[in-house]
Picture 1 (spheres, one colour):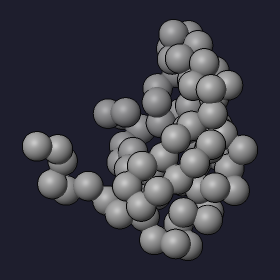
Picture 2 (cartoon, rainbow, N blue to C red):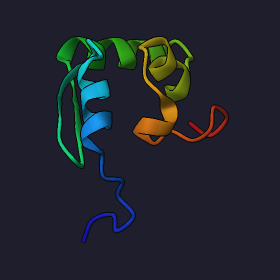
Picture 3 (cartoon, rainbow, N blue to C red):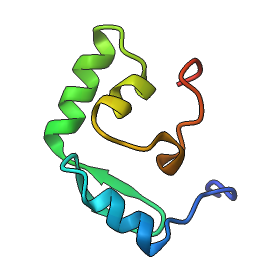
Picture 4 (cartoon, rainbow, N blue to C red):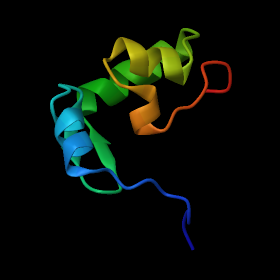
Length: 73
């Protein structure tokens, strides 16, 4: 049935996300990342980086994309 608590991105937030070179496309409900970022993120994760660390280094605002804690991500 899907996530009922899904965040909807505002037009302003969508434009901010689209300005990140690691983003291929943004809709109100989804972010599509570039293939290069997906590969780099997996490799970084395999070397011990947390998802939060990976996304911060890639220039993302964690609150905006929904990662809430460095320790749990």
